[in-house]
Image 1 (cartoon, rainbow, N blue to C red):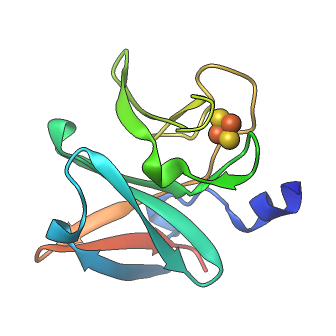
Image 2: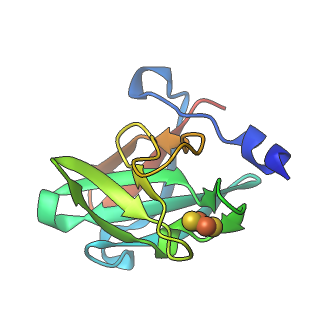
Amino acid sequence: MEEILEIYKTTLTEDVKLWFEVAKVSDFPKNGGACIKYKEKQIAVYNFERKNQWFACQNVCPHKMEMVLSRGMIGDQNGTPKVACPLHKKTFSLENGENLNGDLPPIATYPVKIENDRVYIGFAE
Ligand code: FES
């Protein structure tokens, strides 16, 4: 089942080849997540309004390969923004994808930019 993870690769802003427009800012819940689709990927997008930041990562949780991270609670661990999987509460850094409470593989993260009230996710392919 781990092959599900192979299509998700952390993308840094400097490696972005395409900014994919996903929706308006107002289409996303405040301090929560939503799922968008890009090609065959499901991407969780979070409007972390309390921090005035946006984050994006793979929607699939590497614990049981469930497409659920967009429904996770977001929060802060010692200054690191994180998401908790709604199923078994594994937590992941939204900055670098690290599993903060276990030894699961990191999740892939993607850059987000907001322009003219629109949300864009950066992809390298
Ligand atoms: S499926 Fe995400 S923590 Fe178990």
